[in-house]
Length: 185
Image (cartoon, rainbow, N blue to C red; front, side, top):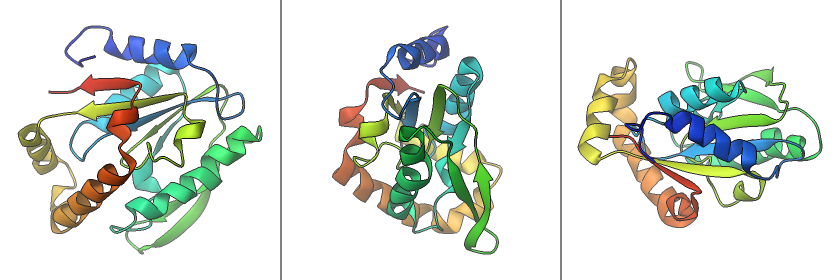
């Protein structure tokens, strides 16, 4: 699937609606991929098309070295409550203070989209109805990262984050387990 094809977001939502509910009665789509691949933008389009909540891993990472540490938080705060028929309750990371922020509540009906690096971790996959991998060429990803509104804040951590991604993807291999691969040139 390519974002250059008309109707790609509709087809992604159809795939989610047709997949079995694996988190209680909720169908969860995780949108995974390297930094700058376009996950956030694509997830926003899919969530809007599906008329469902969107959770960002960026809100859950406990700091710049927290990619792996966010995985058990997603499982405990979001996916396990859904599996028990409840709603997610989670703490947004306060990036300015470098500490957990206030508790958030996200009412979920039948569909939920989670986007970000780590959302396709092996510990989360049993709850995921659809795992989507977003791919963009390295030069495109780099240009997108440079053009981000928060590029100056992100720049000092870019190589640290890239190393975490490399280790995470080598270990968890979400692309190999993806139900959808979305090319986002």
